Image (cartoon, rainbow, N blue to C red; front, side, top):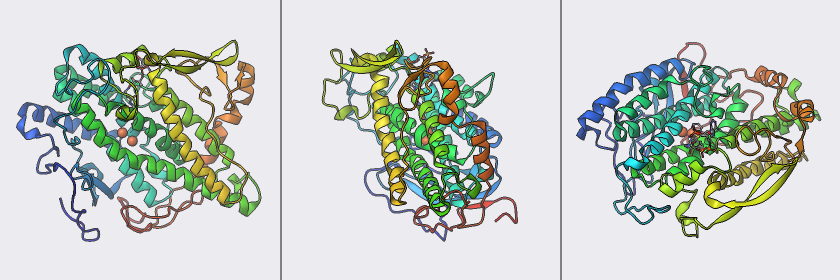
Length: 492
Ligand code: BYC
Ligand code: FE
Ligand code: FE
């Protein structure tokens, strides 16, 4: 790799690591060169991926972008930063180190050696999980395609593109597994991953949230906060999988995921900071006329993205989830740190449900409620960011606060689907819902008002008026660093 004179070489890697081979057409640490058939199959898929990237990847033309690329999967040495033309980004295949002694840690195969091949009896289920996971990655790139045209700064533009190239790499991660372990069927699924498209009426993406439009940057920040966080939790369960190549792939993906959530947490935080500033400056909550996003509109965006992300966990009670667990395909969040038998045949838990217009609680078998188990972990994590944002409001001397809506609010999947639940957790009738939904979810007018603020700011170090600058730049660079060189002369 070339070394940028302004940034120098990447830090010297420490800790156990396997280097990524960049002399190959497809960078990898899985000895692709040692398997010519697989290599040829993936090299056949590569141009299709690049076509897809050109057609449905970032729409704003750029010369190059200051991106991090994985160079080794070891503890510290995996990231290298450099200005690269985006379509020359070295998408590749990186698995975390293999632990030769790794065991299956839960379910009926508990204690057996982890699987290096796919057992025939679990083939269909494993492929399904990998396809669903793989489908979300390019979907998010498609959803974020046009955001570059309205970036609030060059710094934010760079972060968007970093997220986009890494979601592209996450697609590679799943396509590798499909090609390497699922034969002809796997190759066919890999083709389909490029053929379904977000929002396409005939061939939509598999999961609901990935067919929603990402209308503006506030929505993007909410998406990376709430929806990428579903990614974190789902990958966390697949990292526990008995199928070792899947576990190792997900472990490395999780390292990249941390940055996506950083973009969301700090993006919303900076929006809230600016909102607080404008509220104080003008002595009003109605700050659209003053170029900021009112807090109640931020809350509505939060309500929307939280509720569609909750749907991504599937039904609270799911036989699929129970079977995945018992078979060893998908574990729980932090499986090995849980203090129970990791088989769960006798375990139970409480679950809320709606009956006679009331939210009630009943006890259900734990194995039936593993989607709910994961969702609860997710919700607790989501609350951390909200606390942070509220700290910013408190620091600004304001009494208003943001909050997570009730788990039953605006749900289309699971036990709350078909019921109308307010953000405060009250079950209401359809007429009440219709009369009040505009207070809880963004209205077309809200979205229009937000869109009107989304003017691009492409001057280095400058920020659009609705958002505060970040504390620091990326990789110790200054905030005003030339993170992106746009293609069009005169724009920079
Ligand atoms: N929309 O038994 P149930 C990420 C289907 S995000 C539409 O409750 P199960 C990322 C379900 O497939 C992480 N359909 O579901 C983030 C099933 O269909 P079949 C993505 C839905 O199987 C940002 C039926 O309803 N990874 O990485 O227990 C940017 C019955 O459902 C939905 C994964 O999701 C929905 N929301 O759980 C980029 C991990 N929910 O089989 C990337 C892999 C459910 O009856 N996926 N259905 O035809 C899974 O583990 C599971 O498939 C799910 C569903 C958790 C999604
Ligand atoms: Fe991802
Ligand atoms: Fe992500």
